[in-house]
Length: 292
Image 1 (cartoon, rainbow, N blue to C red):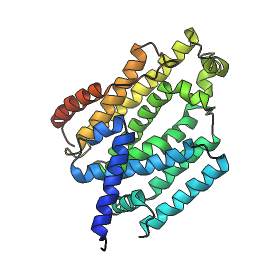
Image 2: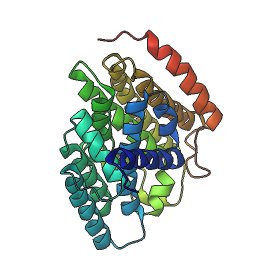
Image 3: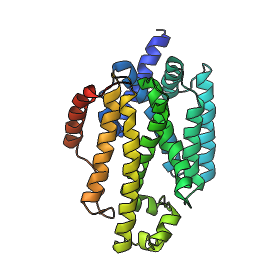
């Protein structure tokens, strides 16, 4: 029995859906608010990002990881030209064509994942922002092409929201990242607040630690504020997804602060019930935002 292109694409999108539902955690609840075409397109984008992340976080040597990421880059371009190898790339190539997405954004995403293989520290916040752009803001820029928008200011807002979310992840995952030899907090901030890497490695929570965390939290909030501008530029049919993502991650940041930054014990997270409640609330209120 011959499998048609339509059947293959359906299988590819379903595979991306299953993968996203299993792995996406916070993202999946936001994706549920999207219209069907946008929803399944975002699943394909997430699945591709997941493949890249899994390569970087795997147990292979650094050289092997670089080889695999380069192969993923080659496979991506091959898929775009009509020769997809694997279900995820088949679906992703269809998404790129349907929404006329600049393929360079996916190259930049791979560039960001590669940064994790060589850059274990960031001297300044500007340096960190380069990393945040590649691993988070780029996803935002890809997503708004799928969501639809009218104003070019949506791009800057998408970048800022990506940075806010990435800072939140960094603060929550301090211990986990330190165990892999990574310190994402800018070294200039550690020095300014006189909190050392040795103290971080030993899970020390002192006055300097709390001042540092409050500073980084305040910084993240500024990016959430500017990122919230995206609500008014996104197509109303897709706006709830942005609103839910913003709301979930901001609530996570609030929880980190309310629990006095207890990031060296059990991982701080939101329950499925909380995520569902946030999704419902913000889905409803998103319809009240004026579309520019």
